[in-house]
Length: 305
Image (cartoon, rainbow, N blue to C red; front, side, top):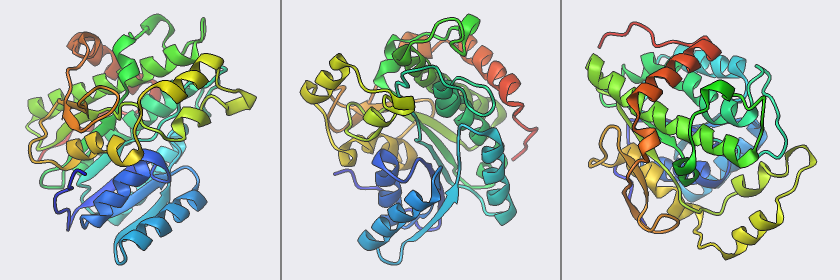
């Protein structure tokens, strides 16, 4: 098992921390000494996760705060709460997501649900937290993507899937958007001289409720092929699947703009992973970033460090 380095004195925010890879990441960070904020949509589930973490690590510093990435007002309220505390933010782990929603669904802000939850919400969160991140000595933003993004493209003509909706295509596009956000943030940090490390990760085929919660929204159910693949494709538990995200967030060897995943694609120990060509297109990344600013009304502030 990957050993997280000493995190005493650091403040970490983990989104989607009540289950799966988010809970595992929060548990390991708390065990390494970080003060961890469990950023969750349902506080009661967050409290259950907190109790589990404290049972494993008595004396750990873990708190629950509400965050619904499908609601920009919730994102703003979460940021305002951290800002009011005035403490530098060392680590932001963009982990939460939704997968393969069977019917096109919109967020409260009118975004297609997978794009809104997986990309636009994390984008708004990350950008609005930059002032707190840049008061930390060596801040990191790590964002969870997916191997499905390798087959995706950004459809600027139908970004919200209003003309044609495919659950898998919308999910893959949202995860490619996460890759592009990661790379563009790394470029911004380099251009502006920020001490911020932005890196990405993917969990391979990790068994979490992400596989079932999305397909069952609105009364849906996983298709036959999906159900069959869940049973026969090599998979791993959250303990292993979380490690690429933890490596990107804490390892001394992690590098800006790099991408980490399982050694054998679906399972295995962490290694540096080649980004697909679609995620390395800086023109597309800049265009998508500008579009995200327009849609969310959130822009990078004029920061100096």
